[in-house]
Length: 243
Ligand code: NAD
Ligand code: ZN
Image 1 (cartoon, rainbow, N blue to C red):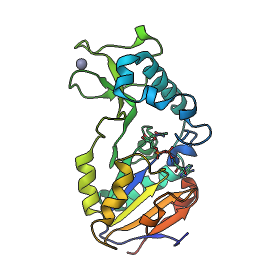
Image 2 (image 1 turned 180 degrees about the vertical axis):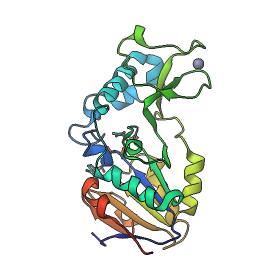
Image 3 (image 1 turned 90 degrees about the horizontal axis):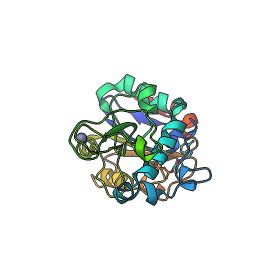
């Protein structure tokens, strides 16, 4: 641990990026490591547009399984601490999550973007209709519902090869934050893995950066502060206001 706290000044804008690690203590497995969902399904078989074309039933079995296992999980102290920080600094706070679960919003976060989509939303594969809330489980081919336009209903998830959601807003917030933090991500999935690089490129020392997770990330050197520990233990005592 290079330092004890992250100091937030009265005018500082704070950008936080979260990954699967922040939901691990809520019982949602991370992708990498023992017990990860990757172990039961080959992700390249289920999380890309070609898989959807080839075998939509398999794709929906995977996301139905993930809906079923995520539904009973509750937000943990890490999610709650971020919602509390937003409560304190309001629109100066911005949360970008790679997670598709809904634990951040259930903890009270409002200013957030789900860049990889949302597990409990579906959309039409064909038309421009807005995604809608959906907790359904579609485990056989006949059960996959269709939109009024005739297209099949698909998970509202950003698959490999698709463009993440909210990138314009994310770019804007990366450009104006004074504090940038990353919590619980292995840092191998782009473009999110490159955000720390983007803020550092704004000028040495211009943005204060930190990482939280049980292991030092590959790119630990890119962060001004690294807090080694679990999100649920570190994040609730992480921030201090300099006001
Ligand atoms: P990942 O599985 O690649 O890495 C998880 C990271 O979390 C690791 O670096 C690990 O050290 C860390 N971690 C484990 N326990 C932790 C804890 N208690 N506190 C803090 N950190 C902890 O996850 P990723 O980098 O987010 O992977 C990217 C992809 O995985 C994204 O596309 C995301 O959509 C997807 N994903 C989402 C969920 C979810 O919605 N909850 C779950 C699994 C994977
Ligand atoms: Zn449609």
